[in-house]
Length: 284
Image (cartoon, rainbow, N blue to C red; front, side, top):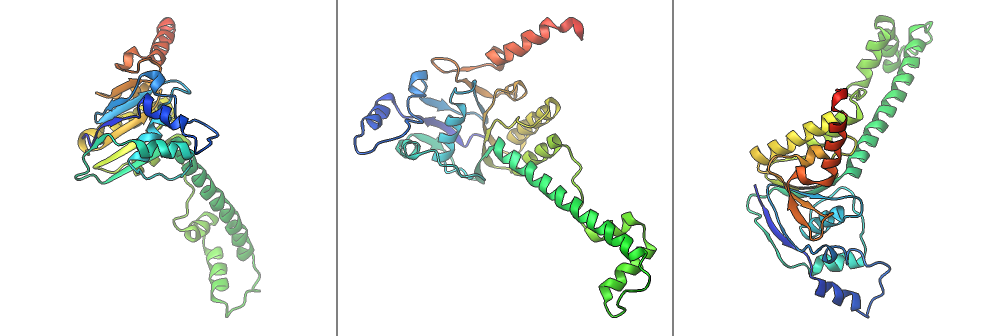
């Protein structure tokens, strides 16, 4: 599904007028002087569109500009500066069909890391609770009748401790607060699967971070299926070969001047992988 059909960045002339504005003094020109130097202005989108490039190529900046203009929701609100906001406000040429569009959301790799840290904190809390319950169990199991008979909870804990194993005693009191035993990669993949809904636009900033090669392949398959069967549109910044190989994705190579749309097999980063494995093919 293609909700966002096209988007036009500001021209070199408009950026120059912003720089010449005398009423304000800006500490940084960000995000100016990035895309005019790349001769890149007009973007056409497909169900899956990828911004590819090395560090500093502008792929995340481009994703942020599109997301800000579309008022995409995001978990972490970070100010990009007054000039960035002015830049976004001046953009007036983009084509989007919002009929049946459920949501527009931007998700960064930082959101995944925050999710993993939350899981770790939950596990730490559960571990502390388990240790306290284990101590409580043995205190009650070997209690020699000092419990207040009129204190129901104390009496129940003592009876349970004498009748249950330590694992069952702890398990019944933890309820659903169990240890999350997935790996970081499995939890990160679960995060993406929980975030993606049908009939929506998703702007994903380097979603491959924290994922193993195997899980990157799984994520790529999930994105393809979401675009094909659940009417989702994806705009992704990445240099992962597993995501660059997404079927029918339109890829903009931001390392090129002028920026061009390329096949994933033509990209420099992918060619490096190819040459490396080809040079070692006899070792497999």
